[in-house]
Length: 336
Image (cartoon, rainbow, N blue to C red; front, side, top):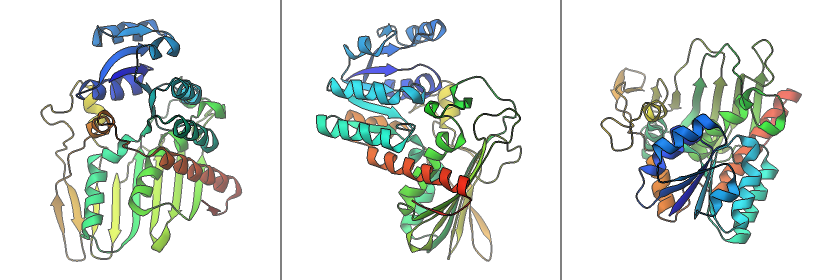
């Protein structure tokens, strides 16, 4: 399958390009970037691929478009590919708004082409471990799920993610919330209600950099989610509290850092972490190995013609995030 990779920044170069390259049946035939430095890096990494500046040029050599551009461009690029009958992978979030995302989903359905969203954190090792423990009943009835993406970046960097224009789709709620809410929905279903606190802590910040979201799921499960660029002290990455025991683990999944360092799926130690998780009950604690992370499973499914992430899930996540933003504005619990 011929793949056109649109964008060669963090998402394109670090995540998508190496995972596509590692997948049998997928071949990067075109890369779109207008940045001269990124063009040179793309040519070095993929000497056989065409390095072009427009999507139209790339789509001439593609069966699949992978959209790894800034969020603003997701909708027009996806719709153009769909109109040409090309399958589409879009980096999360699918769009800056749920209505725009739903438009893409409808277009793909009407055209009968593949559409999926790169919700790669479904294949984090810590999440896979938590999902397995919950499914196996090892924790008993779950009452609370806590999940954190906390970083300490007190200086505001240049780039679209820090720009206040809503069309850019920047800020922690959309950037990291699209991962954390998706994980909570996979585990416990679509939430009924949401409460959120959305704050700008850093001087001169144009977008939120410190966010808390509380979700109320059916059967009483609560998900408490934190996403922050202003956290010098980090809480556990995941905590799941059940009526039999609890599970916790620290630190982010290693795959992003490994891919950035040049380690590829199948390489020694890829997706593995040395620090174990913890299983805790009322009488003690024991270590538990964290499952190996496996981002490569996403593109393996694409190569088989499957849809690894239903894009309607991503629309639903955006609906929750929009309700969370309303909650932060009204200071009230909102329906999802």
